[in-house]
Length: 376
Image 1 (cartoon, helix red, strand yellow):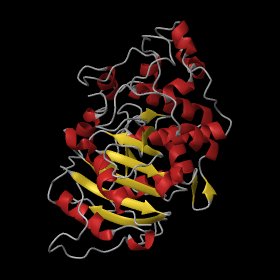
Image 2 (image 1 turned 180 degrees about the horizontal axis):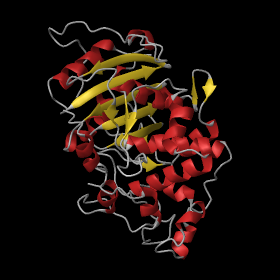
Image 3 (image 1 turned 120 degrees about the vertical axis):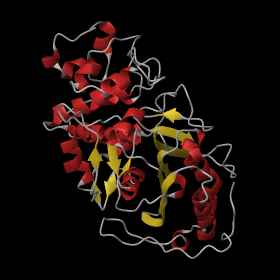
């Protein structure tokens, strides 16, 4: 499926990842509240942040019983504090997990830093950043018209399909040790950019190349200096090009679940973390509003698309409440999720590894269990 963008990366990384109830599951021992780890997270408890702990523990019991397949972690932050944290299948707070295409949303933040620095504008043509690639292959008027914003909104116009993965341009790129950015820049066009949404992971590789070029340091170095360090992240890693070490900005990032939760909190707080403006607030607003209409939904959930962020609605069939508002979503194959719910000042992260319909389980239990656990 198109959303299964980096299955081959999981093989290469050899990570091998392994309805609601309102009362405590019978016989379940009390579980501790999140523990401070000197990683920047202020910790709290569900009850202190207006969450029904019994309802969340009932969810944890169903996860433990395998009802949602392989879920490795679920974390909830509310009011800027880590309020609930559970790990499964041997995962721990200090173990980095593959994020797959959640990496795209992190790349959007890095693009926002470059825009805020005045290094790049979203209306700039892509080919103009690569004079050293001349002559660019398959260059025509459509490719000359391809802008940075088209990479951000998945409206590249490239003749690129990731469904099926076998034999796709993405598989070819993932298994190449050549210049990944040039691979994308040279790829032929199918149509005018900016017109039709199609999932193109390669466009995010090219975006990572642009961000690094304009900032004067490779994009993973920029990420470490300008994003990961301010957010006090640790233990992160990238899947890299085996030839030149370039990071896979389309799906190769690994983070601890606590650090993925920080990414969501950063967005919820308008680009701020710990009192510091890390990503421009204007970029957060621009990147998390609906700019395109995807050609598919995520499970049963209707979606819009911003700048490498998915945009869902609280008006969802699985939500028992009749309400409106956005849910900002980062999604990666196998069940990697960041959910940002501004209306309730809440962020949820879930990681796992499901290669069937259960990959979307966390999206479902956000609506059936986590949001109904809000009590104030």
